[in-house]
Image 1: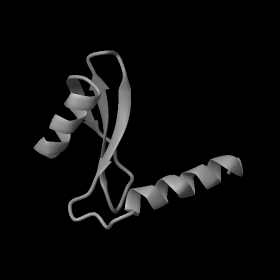
Image 2: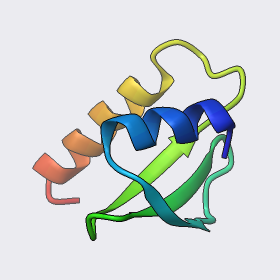
Image 3: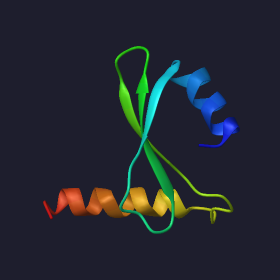
Amino acid sequence: MPAALVSTLETTLGRIVETVPVSGGDISSAARVHLDNDRQVLVKWRAGSLPGLFTAERRGLELLRSAKA
């Protein structure tokens, strides 16, 4: 995980205790991040990401959820 992303996550969410790579994606890297406040989050990143890529993905996931797909 890029150092700048780690810094941003720790500043906004809390200290990272552990990161576990998550497989399955073709375009982006992903990891389950365990924080010191017992929270877990999924973090995705991609070097050279296209503007709006993750926003479009989120919208697609919201549409699938609303269709109960």
